[in-house]
Length: 79
Image 1 (cartoon, rainbow, N blue to C red):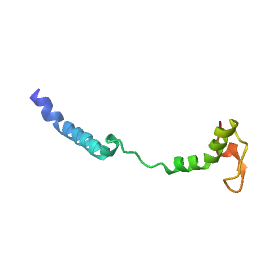
Image 2: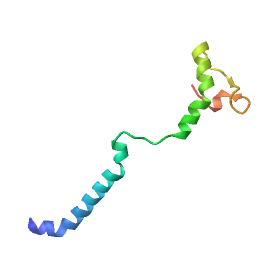
Image 3: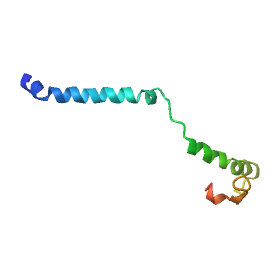
Image 4: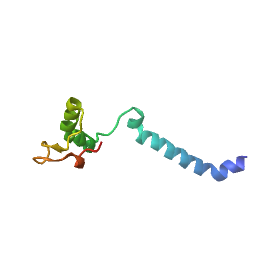
């Protein structure tokens, strides 16, 4: 058994080092922090007029006036 630790001890130390390094590197994720997803926020902002219309009328609009001076909604939101 002692011979096994002599042969594989360095591998266990290196593996333990990388495990500790991963826990240190990903510590913010373990604390519940997340990256800001700007693309998702912008998508929700472009769909806000569509969602507002859908909440009021109950139907999905086919056209939006808020993006590029007007465009079909199927390009920015799909039911």
